[in-house]
Amino acid sequence: MQQRAINAVLTGVTGTALAGMLVAGVAAASDDSAPGEKQFLTQEAVAAQQHDARQDQAQNKARHEAENKAENKTPAGNAENEKKSEAAKSESTPAKKGPKALLSGTTTASYFWDDGSGVRGDTGAPASGKPMQKGMFASPSWPMLTKVKVSYKGRTVTGFVGDRGPGEPSHRGIMLDLDTYTFRYLLDGGKPSDKYNAGTGEGHLKGLKWEVLEWGKGAGQKGKPRPFGS
Image (cartoon, rainbow, N blue to C red; front, top):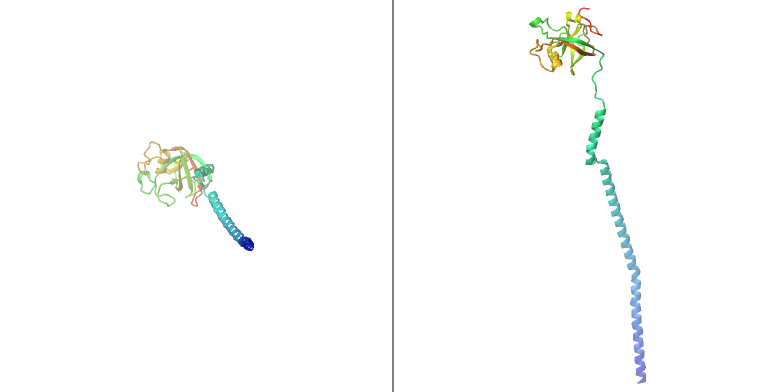
């Protein structure tokens, strides 16, 4: 009896010891696999961090590109300011002027239309050989084809010397004959009744301003106008 009791005790103790050893083995096995698992998790975390870093770089690059485009692009709100700035520049920039006058002065001007038809005292075709036309003036002395600008009451016409005249009136200070159309336009902005009649009681323009812009190469004398035949 005693022997069987002892055997039973020993068997219990041995079972308990074996169970403890099995538990320890399992725990050891678990501890042995832990470093591998920890290592795998660390590599996965590193990969995730690298992925996040690449995403951050891409986002930063996209943001910088968007900011650069925004800086280069004119905001809609500033478009009006730029227009105003350009307008201010154009206002402050002097307008381009025409050719500088070589000689200028004032005189009394009459009008004429000589086309060789003999109508109303027509003296024949223009001396320059050019056909009678709008913008053709007659001077008692200037070279033929001299370019001249005339102004009166804020209106201006640029023409050329294409004939001689006026004759005797030039000795009384009337130093330019204007074609009928130019005369009437300078007077009141209107049109003549016909080529030979300005359609107004005015036969002279006093205080007409003239400017020689370019001397012609035809016959005549440069300088201030001189009476016909002098």
